[in-house]
Image (cartoon, rainbow, N blue to C red; front, side, top):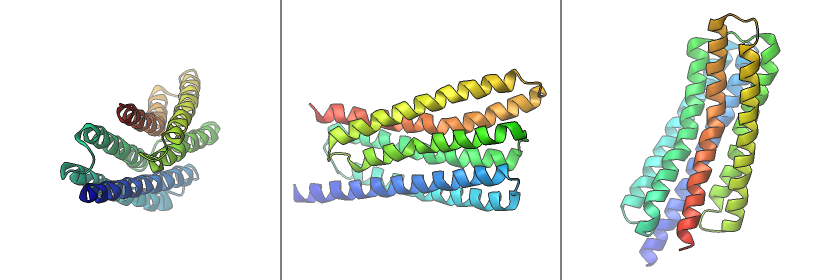
Length: 214
């Protein structure tokens, strides 16, 4: 029992470290977008590389979490849910990295009238992670706080969804060439996918709460 408890404490520690690395990847992604919009490509490339490094570190933490679970941490009823959560949390960093790759590899032209909206959407999408991280820190500790924070993630993600619809409609009813419209739409998708996956991770946490209640 003591041995299992130590393993569980180690998993909790690793999950929090995993979340911190994902958060770091999101922070550098936001900086990448902001810098790209100012057309400082050299600095944006360096920031995008930092996102790549953070994503690699996050992936390493995910593998450590899963290895500890395979070795017997937590009861079997929780392991599948925890593995799914770790994998979904890691996808947040994956999408942050892919968004940076899209910007620096494809170099979309962003008209001046869309720059502020793109930056705000990025900030709002990344902001979904803040309550998710708080929910993670309360995993198997305070489920009332966890549920409150997952609800907050859902509310923020819904707002991003609404803004995504609005800007997509604005793009496709503009006079931009179709190729430019499609390029901007893909950029918007990459940005908003961050909030979507944050919501998926929050859903995984809520499933764990349901399992714990039985």
